[in-house]
Image (cartoon, rainbow, N blue to C red; front, side):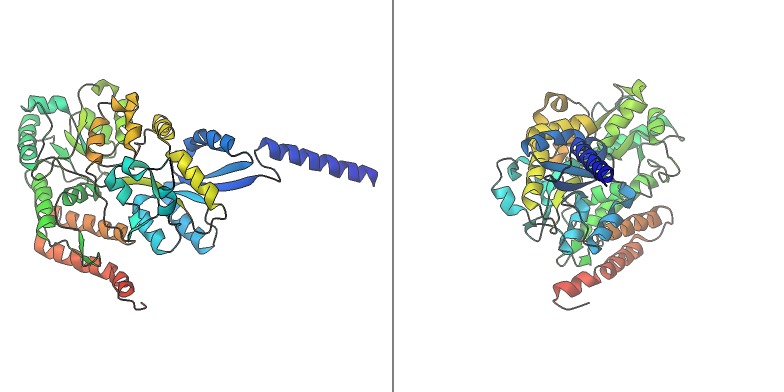
Length: 423
C-alpha cells in the first residue's frame, strides 16, 4: 500500500512538473487560438511577449490547413467547439457574422489605446464592418496588382508602368508586337476570378444591387470591365490558359512568356527566391484604372473573437498584442504578410522595399467585395461566366443575363431574411 501511494505521489509530481514545463498547470488559463496556413507556423514567436505580460495565461495555437479551414470552423460552430480567437479570411466574416458566431468589437476598439481604426487602410478596415457593426481587426492584408517585366516593357518603348487602361492597351499591343507570336503581353488565368473582379471593382457600379440581394452584372460598369477583359484575349495579348495549363508562372515570367501578371504580395518573395537572375528586370505597379490609377480588392485575414469564448477580456488583449505596430512589423519580417496599419509601414525595411511600395500605394484605395455570406459562390459563377465568353465565344448579353439569374437564385434566402419571413 505504501509503495502504491509512493508511486502515485511520484507520478503526480512528475505530471505536475511536466505540465509546468509545457506552460500548463492547475492555475493556468488557456486561450485557444486557431490560425490558418503558414501564419500558424510563425505566430508562436509573437506570443512570449503577451504571456510574459499575463502570468498564468497560456495561448494554445492550433494550425489549420487552408483547404480544411472553412469546413472545420463551421463544424466547430455546429458543435459549440469554436476557439476563443481565430484568424478569419476577410470574405468569411459576413458568413460567421450572419451565424451570430462573432463577438462585436467596436466598444473594445473605442476603449483601446493600441487598436486605432484611423491607422488602418480604410478599405481593409471596412471588410470587418457588417451592417454597421465591427466584428474583426485586420491582421494582414493583400491586394492584387501588376507584376511586370520592366526590361521587356522598355524594349517595347515604355519607361514606366501603364497608368490607365488606354496606356495599358498601347503597352500590351507594343509588347505583343515586340515578343512575337509565341509569347504574350499579359497572363489572366481563366480559372481565376481575381483579374476580372479587380477590373470590375474599378467601376462605379456595385456588383450587387437592391441591398445586395440581386446581381448587378448587366450594369454599364461591369460590362465595361468585361469588354476590356475580353479585348485582351481577342487581340492575342493574353493566352487562353488556366493556371493548371501553366503551373509554373515564375519560370514563364522569367523566360518572357508573359510580361504583365496580376498577383498578390506573396509572389514578391517567390519571384526573388525562385528567379534571382531577374533582379532589376521586374517590378510592381498599382493596377491601372479606366481613367487613371486603379484600385483592387481588399483581401487578407483578420482576428476575431467568437461569442462562445469564456475569456473575452484576455482574448481581446491577445488581439491587441498581435495588432501592436511593433508586432505587425515583426510578423511581416517573419512571413512577408503586409501589415494593415500605416504606422507599421514606417519600418525602414518595408518602407524601402521597391516591390512593396506599389502595394502601399494601392492599399489606400483598396475596396471590399460585397459583404454577403454567399459571395464566394457568386464570384465563382462570375469566373465561369467569363470563361464561357472567352473560350466558348458565347454572347456577352446572354452570359451576363444568366449570371444575374444565378446570382439572384443564390441570394434568394437573403431576400427572404431581409423581408422578415422564414425561408
